[in-house]
Amino acid sequence: MASWIVFSGFGACSLLVMLAVAFDPSPLQDFCVADTSRPAFVNGLACKDPKKVTADDFLLSGFHISGNTSNPIGSAVKAVTASELPGLNTLGISLVRVDYAPRGVNPLHTHPRASEILTVLEGSLEVGFITSSPENRRITKVLEKGDVFVFPVGLVHYQKNVGHGNAVAIAALSSQNPGVIIIAGAVFGSNPEMSEDVLARSFQLDKNVINYLQTKF
Image (cartoon, rainbow, N blue to C red; front, top):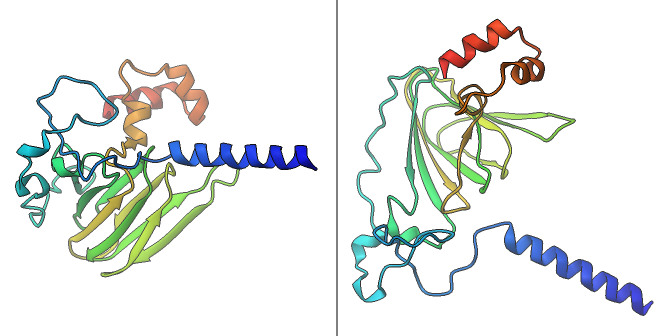
């Protein structure tokens, strides 16, 4: 019995350690305003001297300005990370504004380091994410103004404007540097290029189709 208690305690401690390293670390001070001029390379950004911090370090203006959606995917993403808003450094959060033209899409992508909670400000959006293999189940919903939807960390997801006018959404992410992997661009636009044989076998497509897709990215 004693050995089982020790083992269980070790397992619980291991789980806590894994949870602790799965997300951005907790701050060790009131704030750590990013100092992008510092050459030091750290897991995050170096801290500005607290004595030199001002209110402007915690402010970003212009988030109400619409993005340019005149592109092939019909959407524009404006990110707010510690690079744009230095006061976010070490706080473990970030923000994006997404503008969608009619039928515009925020294409299939994933955030390797963050969950995302999205709020629709204007328009109607079809949203969805895909669960892990082997189920590959698509969880999807049409959202209207004021609706909120969550995308779990690391899962492939998307949004599509299904209304007749423009749409706008704001999303918060649980990391100051969530990262983004746009699936099509990563697969067909890698540098250096992925082997066409690997892609052809992975997607079960003719190599000529693979070559064409690579030219698009």
